[in-house]
Length: 124
Image (cartoon, rainbow, N blue to C red; front, side):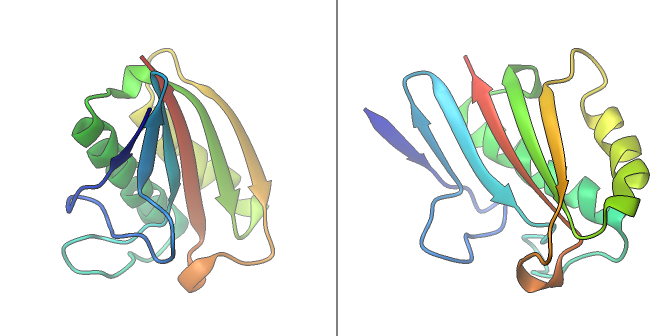
């Protein structure tokens, strides 16, 4: 059985998809753009955008009853791979203990001109 997860504490989906879906004890969090749900704007710079993406992920995890410690895999999409270091510094603070597996890619473009987007999988 699948359960759709939605919270106003993270930005609404910008297309025909759910913020997250839980199935079989696994939570699949859609790629989160760095949109502040209160202002509907993106901060400047990859560090601030990474922080906002991770805040959005945290809000979705909490809504679904999961914690950061339940995250097993993340996918990071970067507009510029040269931003890897700045993204990594923020990411390391969010996952300071037992970080999940992760991959990072440079992509040609991200929705709404974002510099970073992060997708997450968590397991109970």
